[in-house]
Amino acid sequence: MDSIVAPVIAGLTVGIVLIILFAYAIPTIPSTVTKTLTVRIDCLPIKNSVFGGHNTDLCTLGLVDKNGRHYGVAPSEKWNRFLATTIDSSNRVFKVTGNVTRPPPEELKWYDVVGIIDIDSFSRIDDGKASIACGQSIESVRAKAAFPILFPKALPNGYSLQSVDYVPNVYVIMQYFTRSLCDPEHPYSPDEGVIEIVEGPLKLASDARDGEEYVQRAIAGYQESGLNAKSYVFQDGRMKAVGYEAGIGNSKAIDENGTLVHQEQFDFAAHLWVIDDKTGTIVKIEARSADIPLEQLAAIGESLEQ
Image 1 (cartoon, rainbow, N blue to C red):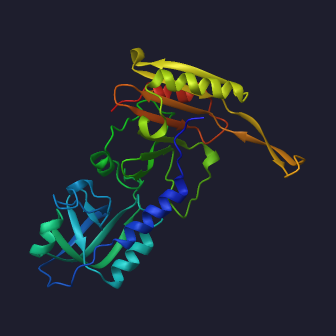
Image 2 (image 1 turned 60 degrees about the vertical axis):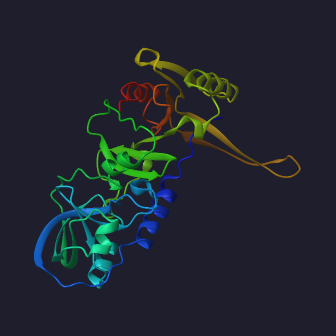
Image 3 (image 1 turned 90 degrees about the vertical axis):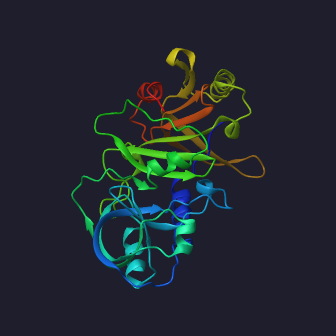
């Protein structure tokens, strides 16, 4: 059965760890002016270099203000505490105060930053108005992705983008829900109704030539497995889709002698795969809850646009 493998929690954790490992390390430099900035964490944009410019897979951690201007950060205990505070709530916006200086020539050579800030104090802004998702910003992912990213125009009432993760040149994961998914004070369970969308190049997920071939193979496999599968055609034939309804599955454990030693039932959610023949993108839409029907996923799939 063709699919995109999407290890969301593990992938997000590894991504965060890698970002910290590549945190911005610069020497302490004299301050020039004290500023208070409204910022969030982001990868510093890299200028054209021997590493391939903005397509490098390395993420050097810094800050970006509400106007999209990036700042490097001088290493300090305050910076370390800031990272420890924000690691589980990277969708939050913070107010940061510190001494800002012009970057030294060597740093300007590599990074597109307006200054280096030595953090003196910081606080989280809890006004509920931030539109920044957990993980990476969708703007930076969209700029770096080597494939077109499609966004749904039709979502259930109250749903919006809450989490973004990206494996360079492989796939992007977007999670939609009615509230934050990365607030440690209000943890969530996936079966509450999170809608997860995973996108990547079709050629990496399957050797099918196009959407029609992918759907034909998938339908045959789903029917053989006893799933309630259905195919769709969206946007005047540009997109082909296939999915199956939520249901009840059976899990069996068989020993080396072929004897059934354990069996139990489990609920599984509806899934939909959409192939956009125009962009060569495959999109997996998963309900993460058995209460969301396939037809609702189909409405989301039909609304996908760049």
